Image (cartoon, rainbow, N blue to C red; front, side, top):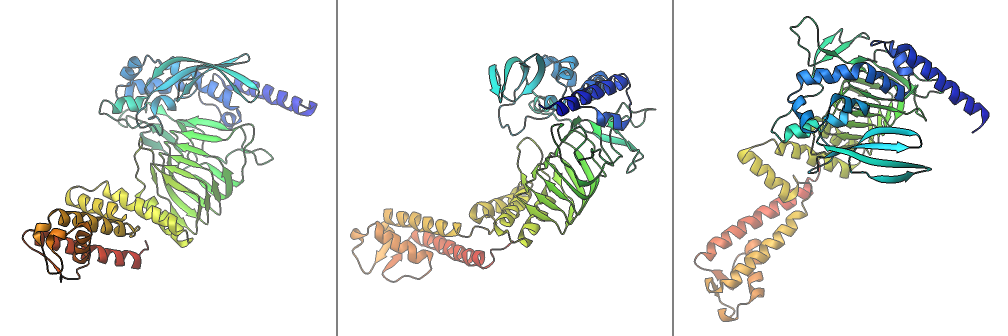
Length: 466
């Protein structure tokens, strides 16, 4: 490391310590001071100030929250010690059966911290040039998974009170008693400003933000991130964002409200929207390699371009992306990406099917498995061949119900059964083989299936659009 960089890092660390000492006992410091703190000391500030208040609020308002902590041998102090609240609350991501998480002590050099791991970690593991030691402290089930196992649910980010909405001074409250003189918990305000960047266009101190009011943030220009980290938001109010001529990669939004998001002449690249409600207006915006999981992605998109941007499934969160599927279908179709457009046409219909009941659900299900709502008419060829073979086998096993003018019925073999099944399926009529008895009913059914399949096959290939 050269002398200049060493001095720069030393000065930055001293400035960070000085700022932290200045505001550490202030529950409502200036917004820019919070952004200027390093992520590590920002979390330390939250441990001293609003994290204890937040968890005390959850003790009073969240369903069976105290019982969950007791059942999993957790305390507010244990949760706060990790510096992150979200993993203790949210359902375990992309996990179908294993709902366990692992509270783990991580040590390296002279450092130590407690983390939440998705799998059990024990012993030494080397990452780059550093050896980390892991020790599993305890196993627990996240709050929402624990509730679900008891047939219950709870909305975590329940915003039911705002002061000065859609204004730079907007204040946001969760689980507020609107009839009381004051609300219980106000989200930490860090919005209503131009997002801070340094002279090189780099995000000024990346942040992992939880339960923060980011409403009214403004973005412009090309913003990059470096060694100071990027922006990651969880259970945050991110409403009324405005971005103009903007580009910033690798932003993560989880369980956030992102309503009235205005994007103009911008580019979103490698963003993640996980269980977020997104609305607003996107004009002349490029969306590249973004991932959307569940939630409700429903902005109005005009003159937008999509590239490797997809709405994906996670069985643990609710999917309300019907309008998103429709919008993606149209945009990908206009771009000429027919295969992707077909995918979203199927997703759109699957969304509807899963919400139907009774006869409507049955017919929609048949359409899906028969030919995926007309997008895979080639399946009909396979069903037709299978039908001919099955009926041919039935006719062969019941040859006493077939009259023949060409052969002795004793010589009737499986090949004759396939022949008779084929002329029945294609409704070519009878000449040398004629059904008698209940075989006439089988011939009628097969003929009807043949007409049906042929009609759908022709219609599917003639109108294989979306």
